[in-house]
Amino acid sequence: MHQIDHSFAFNDLRAYICAMNTPAKEPSKGKLILWLLRDALPLRWKLYTVSLIAMVGVSVFTAAQAYSTKLIVNDVFGSGTDMTAMMVAGFVIAVFAGKSVALYANTMFSVIFNRSVAAGYQKRVFNEIVVQDVTYFITHSANQIAKTILFGRAAGAAVVGLSNKMLTDALTLISLLFVMITQAPVLSLFTVLLLPFIYLIISLLSRKIRELTQAEAAMDGAIYSIGAETFEGIKTVKSYGIEEKSESRFRGAVDQMQSRLMKIAKITGATIPLMELLGGLSLALFVLYAGRQVATQDVDAGAYTAFITAFLMAYQPAQRMSGTWVKLQRRLVIVAQMKDLLDSPVATKTVIDGKEPTSADLTIHDLTHRYSGGPPALNQASFCAAPGMHIAVVGPSGAGKTTLIDLVQGFYTPKTGQILLGGVDISTLSPAQRVTQIALISQDVFLFDGTIRDNIRDGNPEATDAQIEEAARKATVFDFADKLPDGLDTEIGPNGSNLSGGQKQRVGIARALIKPAKVFIYDEATSALDGETEQRVMRAIRETAPNSVVLFVTHRASTLDWMDKVLVLDEGQVVAFDTVENVRKTSDHFKAIFAPTPAA
Image 1: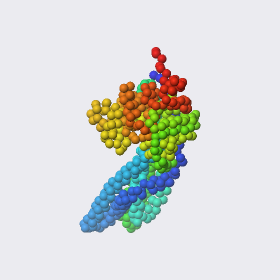
Image 2: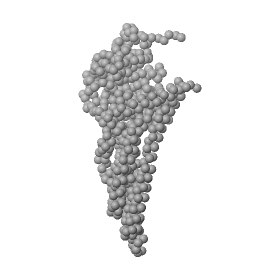
Image 3: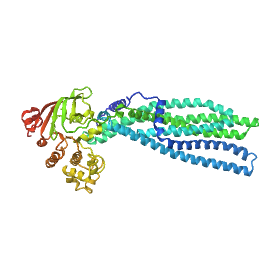
Image 4: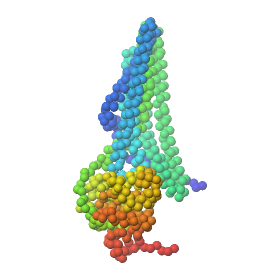
């Protein structure tokens, strides 16, 4: 058994936390709460108004319950008659029934309100993420991004906690305090003096929890990311025998999270016992004072009974408020991250539609691009492609092929140079316009959970079933779809998990063929196809888009037979651009790429 250094797990975790916890300056707690309430409540004012009525009902009926004990002591246990007892009993039943209805209504409205807010924010967060540029998805892991969609749940719980749960308990406390003041003013004054001590305790605890939670959120993301990364790359893990390394990374992350959670649990768990102790001491003093007053003076015993009952009943909403406030500190950390995303300039940037290209003339002029200050991935690349031209893009690994096709799709803005489509700079096109003008078919085709027909239709939502079937025929999809139970309407699972690599590529090609684009980019799109199938697909590609430009990134010599020209890239530069025949004769770079493999 190999010895494993566990320290790297913590280093990985710390690096992840640093990446997660370098946002813009976090807004103050008060400003964040105001933003959340102002953002969520006005859109749902009708629902909230009805909920507010239920909250007031809960508080009023709770106060009436406390006051009813005075009637029971004075009017029933004193010198009351049977009629008086019946009237008091009726009053008690009405109060408890009214509170039951108000509690039920308040609970239901809070659930509806919570789901409304959570669903609203989940949709907004998803919409903001999906319009981010490609750089955002490169600098954030897929697992990290997926977790942000759940921000809405924390926001919904925070809004309901503030505007419903805490407000209901606050109104209840005010109502009970009114009963206490009207029945025993002196004792009520002593109660008011306790409030600063209660506030101080809760404030200290909540501040500490907020500090711990900021790190907890990042650790939670680290655990999720490490686990998902291992399972997604399980073939690599098993091929290289690095199960122990994966276990060590995950164990280190979980251990740190457990330590952090224990600290939070200790602080959170101290809230209720402290409140219990403070309440018990206060009640003992009240009983001593009230007992002495009743024994030595002619005072209203029912009033003191109502006061003590109100005080005891006030303990529960006060305890709930403190608990809600403590939980809120953890949710506000997530809400702050959500606000940072929703307010990000990239997410809110909008691009209006520019001039539509009228032809497929593609001109690449003096194009240069580099990543993070490194050497140029593409350096002063220039070439032109007329409508109907099919161009093979070849070069060794790192030559700049992927950078070129990413720039053509508008995923990045080049450092210098222009990309013109029909004489129009693609940087002036809106994302929606670029989608209609350019189509990508990659080697690792991504398919959505649904049917084959649904995935092909994604290329052109307006396509008829006949057009979908024609595209499927040209891409040889029917070669395997006819053998499936439901043909094109067969469910293929998440990312086409029920299909082979070659079958997925054919569906991806059909999705592109149905799109009325001016530029088609095939990135090793036939790599998983056998020779015969590739020939049929390439013939369909030539026939389907006679007036479009096709860029075909390939390492297969057989694909060149269908190309008009070859673009050879090396170290980010265009080293050859000519017909296939001429490049074969004159380009040493081309010969090195497609040199025959020596016999063993």
